[in-house]
Length: 148
Ligand code: THU
Ligand code: ZN
Image 1 (cartoon, helix red, strand yellow):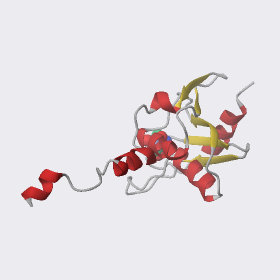
Image 2 (cartoon, rainbow, N blue to C red; image 1 turned 120 degrees about the vertical axis):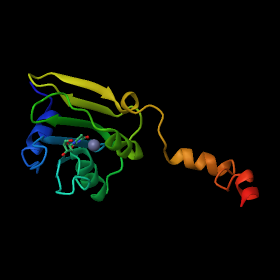
Image 3 (cartoon, protein in one colour; image 1 turned 180 degrees about the horizontal axis):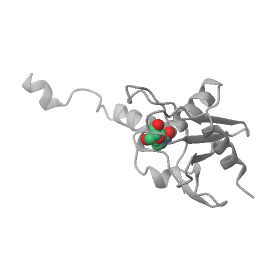
């Protein structure tokens, strides 16, 4: 039997708006309380405004008040095991710990399973900024002040 969260990602990609790439992506994000939010990619004629399925799903979840997540499933129309891109990995890292499970659809009931930490080792996070602030590193560097 297929992973139920993968099924939700597959359902979501049916609504993808992809007139430019014709590459459909669906994502399903399960919150800590078991609620599932889905998203699909939504392209734009200027290309750069295109929304990724994962960011649509996390945007829906966060805007509904959720902040803790358990599992993400991603599927493309061709079931090629597509993984979240670098930008989406960083967006996930804002809310999810390294141990978030990400399952990617390979078709035939096969999935590739990763953790967010595997896909995005070493990232900037709120703690990076807090640590820098605690060390006084958010002030201009001493030599920058001298040269101005
Ligand atoms: N895409 C996603 O929806 N998620 C990703 O993380 C990878 C890329 C979409 C964006 C674009 O609509 C299409 O896939 C081709 O890049
Ligand atoms: Zn992305």
